[in-house]
Amino acid sequence: MLVAALVLGLLAALLVPTGLHMDSVYAHDHLAACVTQPKGNCGIAINSFDHRFEHLGGLLAWLNLVPGLLGILLAAPFVLELEHGTFRLAWTQSLTRRRWLSTKLALIGFGALAAALGMTVLMTWWRAPLDHLHGRMAQNVFDFEGVVPFAYIVFAVALVIAIGVVLRRTVLAIGLASIGYLALRLSVQTWIRQNYVAPVRRVWPVGQPGPGHLDTAWNLQSGSSDRYGHPLANADTIFATCARGPTRLDSACARAHGIYNLAVFQPASRFWLFQGIETAIFGGLALILLAIAVWWTQKRVS
Image (cartoon, rainbow, N blue to C red):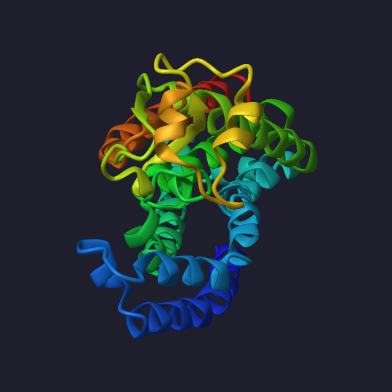
């Protein structure tokens, strides 16, 4: 728990200064007004803000390892006690297996939830300006807010404990649990999450307004298409014909050639629905793993 607290302390030392600076710039540039009533140079101001802090995006990807690390740190002492056999002393001192096991798991669970709360509160505060501008549905954002961090840490704890009670080798349990945790997290984040609910698909003519709140949605696909949302085989030729400068397209010309805009996305309004689904996945797996660990400890460990 002390090491986990140290990890959270280092995370806070990294995020608090940058978070204060980002919040100061957000307020100085009056970007809150751009969220509620976008007009004038809002687009330029938002792009400038994004460019100024875009280097922090790579940091977020690495922070995905923190929930797993915290879970491993909290669960490792339990496995270490099984490996060294020191649990036998407790079992011979009028302490039943069930009470020993429930006390250990309760302490670990309390530590996991406390660590998840600290990390979630810190990340939600740090990302507040970016959330106002771009929403919370995108990858490496969704994973740090809401309730899913609690499920990630509890799942990591349960995975280490379940493997540890069977193998009774701390290093091996940590290694296998790390691989399993990362494999599942990456699979869910890359392929599964976007299909929790069928994404919204919109096609609209060039030069006309697109779907509302697209800036805060999780954009899965965007670009040009025909009126039915199918890719255009001769898109490059049409763009060359209708181009009006390096970044502009003549709307009338584009419509005459059958070019439409396509967007496939998950709306920001589905944030809590997706949070609930993913929490159920990782939380359910954690309960199954803990049930296996409890049964194995009571029936097979001696």
